[in-house]
Amino acid sequence: NAGVTQTPKFRILKIGQSMTLQCTQDMNHNYMYWYRQDPGMGLKLIYYSVGAGITDKGEVPNGYNVSRSTTEDFPLRLELAAPSQTSVYFCASSSGGRYNGYTFGSGTRLTVV
Amino acid sequence: SQKIEQNSEALNIQEGKTATLTCNYTNYSPAYLQWYRQDPGRGPVFLLLIRENEKEKRKERLKVTFDTTLKQSLFHITASQPADSATYLCALDPSYGNNRLAFGKGNQVVVIP
Image 1 (cartoon, one colour):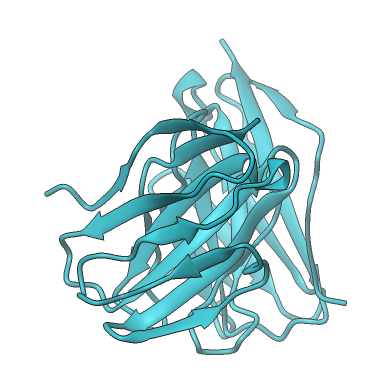
Image 2 (image 1 turned 180 degrees about the vertical axis):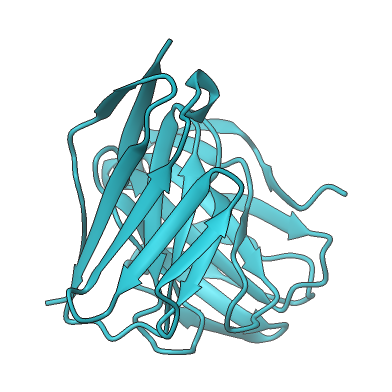
């Protein structure tokens, strides 16, 4: 049982480059999330999805885009990388039940130089 | 503004003692509160959820209390072990049922053998 899988684990981008962070889950969860975690700042919600075809902005969506074409996959796109996007990115999923916890992936550490 | 506050100072505790962490929140009326554990370089792992009508919840050596009047949750690790050393995050849903968690910054626990 893989849970939530994120790729890549590490990436260095140059300013202005683009990339997609991949996230896939095998638990048939409807709800999926992208968070970023900066040192000492806690997890901030970027985007979330309540099911295939449905996405919505979180607290810090600027500079990012998402899509949800299948239940399993929820990729996060950075179009024009900026140093402010240097962070650790976590994908998570949930069954959506009101009293269920999230399952997180192991994270992608992104550095923009 | 809405805030979730956890102590930024690490808690150093002797093995076998009880570690107690505090999570305070303002301008929220959460239906539940969750606690997660995060190890360095890893994603958070769900530990416990406590509902607004529950005063206390236990799981093995973990105990969580929830006081909606004080707007506070306490997280206890009894008979602490070095393997309990990690950062512990509290989280709650500011959207009241829309299943979008906001996280505190976390509180590090170091258990000294």
